[in-house]
Image (tube, rainbow, N blue to C red):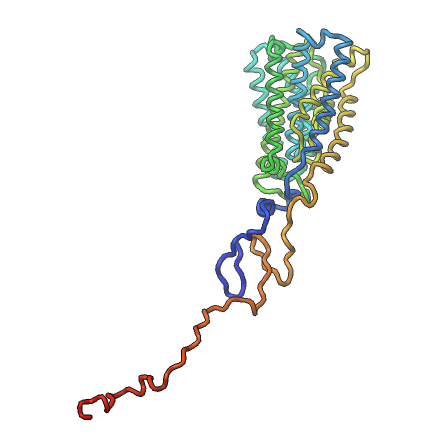
Length: 404
């Protein structure tokens, strides 16, 4: 709250002519990005195109093999979608906080190998231990990112190298020892994934939450620290993404009737990040859609089921690369048409030589000759009758005495 000059020590009240948009942006840190509300029209348009593509590809799959979209085939397809969806959520969560986690693929493969080897101990024992290790690894990764203030992709790539060392200790595919069949609850699993993805998109569209999640996004020098709150948000996203990747690997291993092959898992990272970008999440962080992740995951899953029906050779590297490339184009569209509209927020007048900034608005200083006087002007004196002035009547008048 500012005070005016020239000895006037009363606080200046907010100007009644200032718009609500200006008052709403008064406490915005300009380093957090553009002031104003992000536009979501670009996300609506892109998600409509994803939905149309999904319907068309689903119809082609139905014509090629209807059994894939009904009964046991549909349940298997839904579980595969949930596994890929958890990976996409993991990548998207880290992307939204501008701390991309490139270790999600190797973590998923490591968790799948762990479940394949320890699945006979029970679901809670095998999955629980994998989740705990993933959470601890994500915490170490988060501390390295926020304490050293290094890019998330660089720190997570170093972490991915360590996970690949664990994977390469196995030289042959590992048969799954557990008896968990996720296809029995495929509908509930997919409904849960869709609910989490959509609710996350809805909350992420709220301006305050979107700004909070995107606080780690650099807008000036990327090596500068973004504050304690931004560090906490980024750390939580890195831990959460690592845990989601472990759950995804476990689910994919349990749904696959064949053995788990030890691979680096980086192809899953490319696919997960590509699907997340394809759904409308910006590669720069902060911005993203509502239904885009669910639609992109469903589209890629249906394609992976349709390609073998046409006897096409499917490579996760190729699918992930295509999704990644299209997603980068979508990122440019989102950053161009998703930022606040130019001129949509009233900007205060610039502070010049004759302006006084109060913290609420900019008020023009009044000219000195128009200032109200400090004391009120006394009224004009009334004329005094000299013959009735008390100074002429200090004594008694002689003609009014009894001696007259």
